[in-house]
Image 1 (tube, helix red, strand yellow):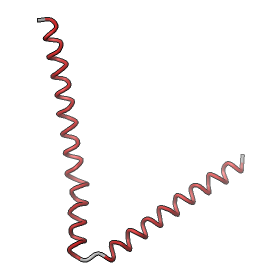
Image 2: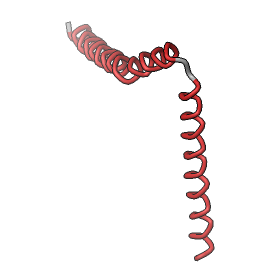
Image 3: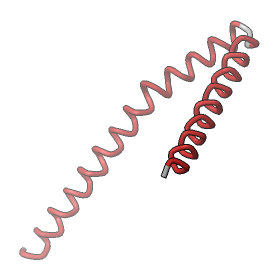
Image 4: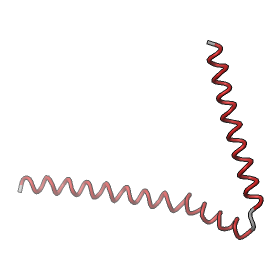
Length: 80
């Protein structure tokens, strides 16, 4: 049983190591960017964080609304 926990600990260590390596790579990449490129990345990131979830939420709301209206129309068409 202790061998299982030892292997699980190794997996967690590998995950943490890979995550730290990815963060270091990202930090080096950001450090190399020029100011205009950094501004462009910030604008794109702001778009992804704020506008894209809003668009997906509105899409889901209108899709559900469309399905509800189609279901109501289907019932009305059967009985009338």
